[in-house]
Image 1 (spheres, rainbow, N blue to C red):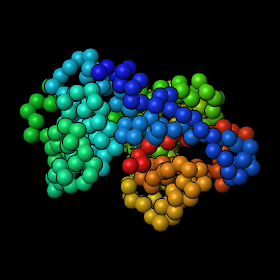
Image 2 (image 1 turned 30 degrees about the vertical axis):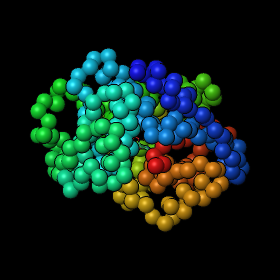
Image 3 (image 1 turned 180 degrees about the vertical axis):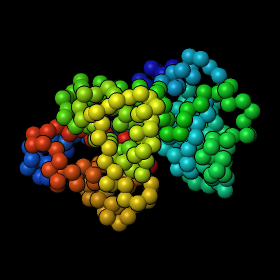
Length: 289
Ligand SMILES: Cc1ncc(COP(=O)(O)O)c(C=O)c1O
């Protein structure tokens, strides 16, 4: 199956743009929209397809032995990649952080394995250095960096910008930040202000990425006040926020990425950060499993 057939048969693209309502922003004459990339597909949800698409295209056009990528035990990225490779019949290997794990350590790894992705488990030190001795020649494969971070990943984000611009003109586009691929792509291809809500303490890493890529993006604003401790660690207030948001808007968000983003947006709205009359687009990058 080629990419166009996969998109047409399986994916809900362009993803919907939905306005949500609440006095916190309506009192400031602010309009707030969610770009529902979480509705693109149950498994290839959120920003995953955007970041993977160009790699998959390259792997299909110039076949190697397959695709290799990296992730933690609950990686949304590996999960989506395994599914896409299964559908498109591309051999895939996942390098997983943690040599104490195996193919049945959790339901996600089990499912990934069932989709045919071969899993290699590395201890944390080797994983950090990406030292994979169990694979003879990595150059025989297309290697996608952890989380889809790369120029190809960044360039895939352009489609989100085009889909938004086709519908509405925005003052701010807001997204959760992990590797930074999504916000860098948004800032590169959009002339709106891009607000990235950091979900882990990696601002310096993102700034280094920008330097490495020789990208000067004055429209990219990174907010580091909403990390709330460690990556992927929730707390009762954040959990309650996610639950209340779902009850009010019938849209599920989760504490690792989109919950932190929306909490950040609500806080910025309370602080009157956005000028009166602004139009805000928050990217729902998925992650609700
Ligand atoms: C659900 C979700 N939202 C946001 C992000 C952050 O995206 P990025 O790594 O492009 O910064 C990720 C990580 O890929 C994610 O899984």
